[in-house]
Length: 49
Image 1: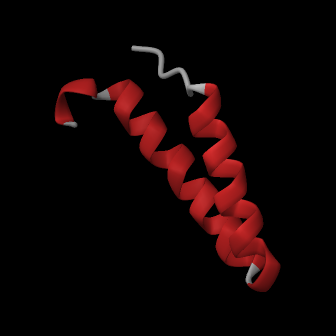
Image 2: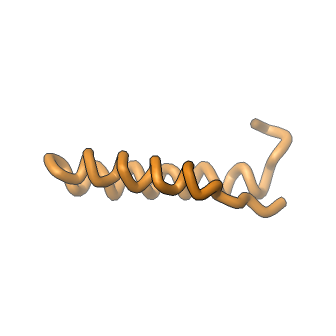
């Protein structure tokens, strides 16, 4: 399965990262990596979610 991010979801994701990065840039990077990790898991195992 290929996960495709909707443009509005990507815009929300970027806004979230920008907001968090203002005070805690490393936390923003960690959260973004967490999003990617979970997206990869969804692609690999779509029936788990």
